Image (cartoon, rainbow, N blue to C red; front, top):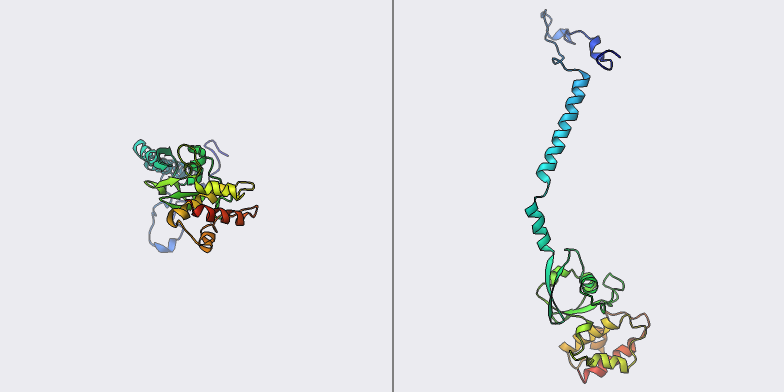
Length: 227
């Protein structure tokens, strides 16, 4: 340790070229060591250059205010739900089931498996039954969405499917019932007089933990004459 800092091994070597054979006739060889280049100066240069590069990356990659505002506007989506236009602030990866339940308060749509298997989250989009737990909200711009809350008449009169399910004691625990109702309404809107096999196929995407499939199927056939 000297007065200028840690010991520098470079001071043990002369300024002559390391391999004299390259210039055997040269009396004065150029010093291979750059002027004022010590171990401390070298490390200081490396650190400073790293700071400059990191700072440049931050400056040129940091989003501007205009870009951030554009992303915020993209979150807004207009939906037509049960005949009413609604505007919600939803991220691009949000599902319709989450939007309906937790942003619009339409809790009749249930989230069961949350992987498009049980059918408890079934709603209609332009008359077609879909699983809302696996459908992104932003994909339904401009479509007419009907949930279980929009099946009954505005005055509260039950839809024939709802009344038929009650008459046939379809609901047991009731968790799957909203999806069963919506699927049955979507079927009868397209085919007012389905066969038993057609009704069974249309309802096959809705699982019932209580096993009340025959009750729901009889309810569909009963409603077919009145829907």
